[in-house]
Amino acid sequence: MGVRIGAWAALFAVGSSALVVVPRTERAAGALGGHQRRGVRMHSAGWLNGMGGRESEAARLEAEALEESVLSSEVRCTILGGGSFGLAMACVCARKGIASTLLMRNREHAKAINEERRHPRYLSDIELPGAIRATTDASEALAAPTFVIHAVPVQYSRRYLRKIAKLVPAGVPVLCTSKGIEKKSLELMCEILPEVLGPERGYAFLSGPSFAREIAEGLATAVVVASDDRRLAYEFSAILSSTSFRVFTSQDVVGLEVGGAVKNVIALAAGMCEGLDLGTNAVTALVTRGCYEMQRIALAMGGRSSTIMGLSGVGDTFGTCFGPLSRNRNLGIRLGRGERLNDILDSATEVAEGVETAFALERLIKRNHKSYRLDLKFPIVFGVAEILRGDSTPREGLESLMLMPLRPEFPGAATPEPNGRSTLLRTAHQQDHILATSPGAAAPEPHELPEDAA
Image (tube, rainbow, N blue to C red; front, side, top):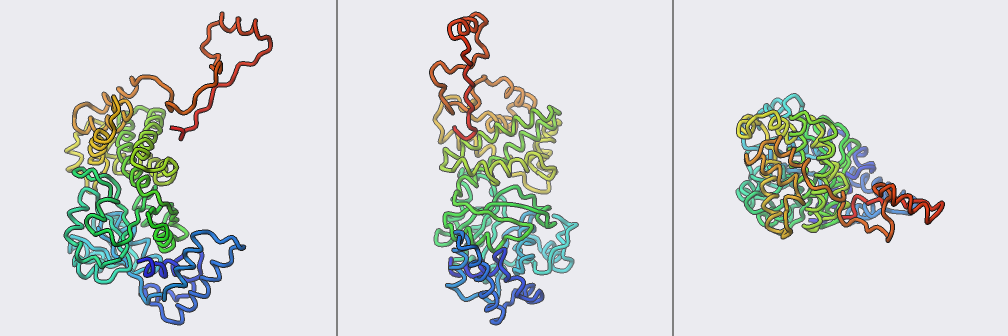
């Protein structure tokens, strides 16, 4: 697995001259002759070694992968799922000269992509690159991919993968772009994939502020790929990165997945605020507190707070809560304006993962968190679930947040020094007494509480 994809990672590494050496016509076909391979090896190695003697870990891994393998004559990617994000990832790969096959369900949609270079339903105004082809034949699509990208919504992933599991070649790594928690099992995709496709292959997970339309249009985007296998994360970064699509790496798979799941629930709440016309102050406060709940969940599940503060946490949350292209935000807006959830879902053309994720998160927290009054620790997650169930209206749910007990913003973040209380709320008599007994003494400053101290 590492050997196969490693060489291709070096070939497509951002900053290398590999794509300059290979003629454009040959890149589109995915064919690299021996002469071009030698050129790639020479120029790529020169780039990797020309780093002033301070070679980064990423560069070292790319160099090792380049030296240990002979470059293949063709790089092939199979994308599972022909929705908006599957199309976007196909565009990312095709623009790097990677032959990309979309495995779809609808034969007419596949035919339209192959003949008209457009999807008739999703991103229909965007012309797709010529290196993309579509098929409904799983055996054909999975005949010999270099790597697989999974872009099927979480709630449908297990059933979908079971149908094709025997066709996915052994050892071929999988990059998952699906975000959420499976409602029935309460599992993340990092648990579902090995269960269905087996543990004897590499898995990586992509997340970050990344609207499919903007990716497909080639607008600047930055994401994170996380994997337990650091080398695999670097290899996917090298293969996918371009001047418009930047891929950072991480080993915190749980933190990345929790961020990608919880942000959709927060976006539902943010959309409700907008639908109720509560103002920017309310939306901003809600999103900020939602990120704190996200952090608590991630830490409880073994993730890192630093991941939540990055692109796959607050970064993805900001885009989803404030971006006009956000499905979850827009669903929340419609709920806030008084529409019924079932009517909204019936009229939707794409899946808003936040709905099922809210219910799954509520159950997951109740199962694993034994603290008293969980609704006070996770008021946004629990509040959204109650609204979606119909137990309260958006206005009632959001008003209840304003009646939450007042307490330190980050409980337990810092302990004041003895006699270090702020003078703000002392009585005039107490202030006079202090001034009388300690002439010229300055009042101590209140402690600053770091945001990630909890």
